[in-house]
Image 1 (cartoon, rainbow, N blue to C red):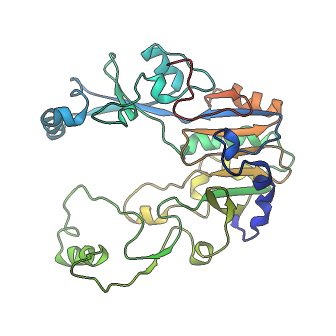
Image 2: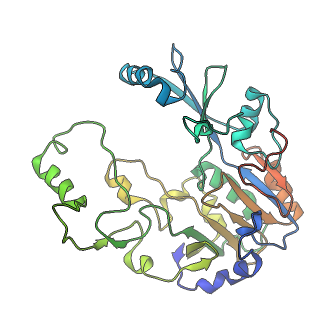
Image 3: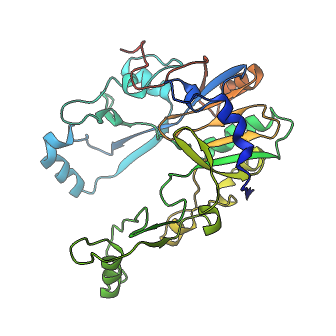
Length: 333
């Protein structure tokens, strides 16, 4: 898979999405496909071993949560499907379901984002699915299904939204992301290390004349400074490659945007999931919009049926013109 400066490869998408946005999936997903599917991003649930969670919201129970954090309790966690959460909360999963409605929470006066972490009577805390990203295993499973429904599985385009933190280099006072260190080590306690951190954090009072410098991203500088596929409200860096490359279980080790900077800080090898994927024959398109907790597939009825039938995926058929805003769930109101 290689970076391509030929962003005209995505002109067909621009011609088939809505500008300005109208509030449907076609703000980012091309019109004109026979069928559409919604691949739900997995959620996570967790619970303490041998004890209960402190009550929510956090701000109303700060003392309990502080004591809980100091106790060093072991936490169990696991990935779950939306259908699992619906069964626990007594709601119904359907194509337009919204996570907040599914777990019976739209936020409250203490925390309007309370739906992102909800405690259930079964003792588990349910964390909302990640928006704008799919885990590596789900990417590989979806890519394997899609590769079987194109005549060009080894040729196509993969796009990444330019706004992912750390992806591209840029001129600025500090990097676009930071790595948090939880334990004290000889390196973090070294005065030279602290001095370096002080120099890299902008100080508007004592360092007013500091000028922006080039901050390195995951991708090479020529890519960072290269052309983008400009779509309404979004711009993408494009790579030429086939969906078959993403069907490998270790695809994240081989893509050009592998996060080697994070690896240098001790994190496991990883890579962002693609924002756009389509084969050269345009038999289908896969779109992971940065603000959505689902990946949308447009393709033939056969392709959509295969995606929805695969047991590794949690996917539902989706009508054209579907709305996926937070208030779109009329069933679980």
